[in-house]
Image 1 (cartoon, rainbow, N blue to C red):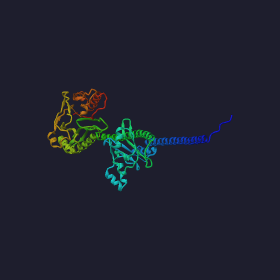
Image 2: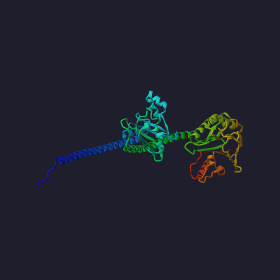
Image 3: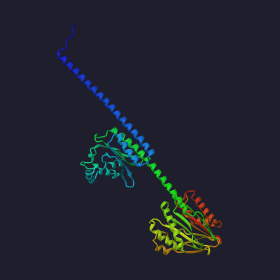
Image 4: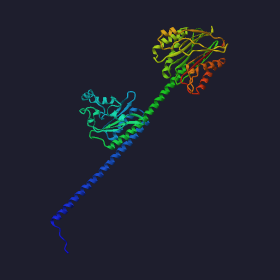
Length: 487
């Protein structure tokens, strides 16, 4: 049987079909090869970004370990973000909590403006391009203003496709805003919102893709962790430095207190100061006067800490200068008040008691400037007297009213009689039920130990207060002086 022959038309159709199929195969093969090539390029791009990110993290860790300067870390974060994302520029803004604004900490030269530009800056930049960068590196923005504020407030990163067309950056006809893209991310660690990090695209690339955005957000998270750690380290170092300075100041302050109790014919004297903190607002002092007399002063500056300690040191110096010039304790306190009043804040004052012991007469002359009333234990009766006298605290009045109220009071001490001066850190010491030690306990402690001498009174009273507060640190400075007539 003969094989049927193919007609010319069929041959043409078959040839055409084969050509088409061959063409489709070539196109499909080319597209497949291009897809493989694109996938390989994409993988290479991702690997390159990962290598840059790992290098950035390594550099960041090294910086935190060896260089605690904030500006070095700020620069490293921005320049690292630029390298990792292959960006044209970058900027880091951190929150100034006091001013409630975002402050530029590092702004690279090529970073596009990320804030709205005033007309005067636009005009200045046309004449002097460097003025724009100076403005951007100094200009803080409100923490809820513009795109930076929006990212900081919402705590959500975003891509800005075109800075020139985004109304948050100002008018679209602003010649200083180039058609660049930006990625902006919050810098936060836990509940601590630190600021925002931003990068802008280079001039030869219009935008960022999702992979860039994902890498950028990861970088921002690591930067936040590094910044938080650096801040903790700097705060710890600052605290250590402050503590060291306070300890040095405390050592100086202790030197200003009497290093031993005075020796005075016919009297035994003992005093002690225990600060509530490193520095004390209380002080006591012994001042040698003419005629073998001895001046005793006790003072309590309102408040605690450094300010109170400085006022305390000033008061001591003024007392030592003025006391030898006057025989009257009231006159001395009046002069102290007039000299210190201009230098004391309105919310501060000093309570003081100043007395003069005269061995030749056995008389004690004292004056009180708003201080806790002294106590006297009489050996003959075993009773405690309270020496209530008028007086205004130093630093409240410039002098006229103070001097009308201040007065000298003279008391006689017989052998065995004991006088106690103390600050309210003793009487107002509180236990865990918020009950105060109180003046009655002070009186009982004095009566119980008076016959055993001033040093026993001081140590015993301090021990009773310590037991009362169950060993807790006192909230106020404690100072006391005990004086006993011996002959």
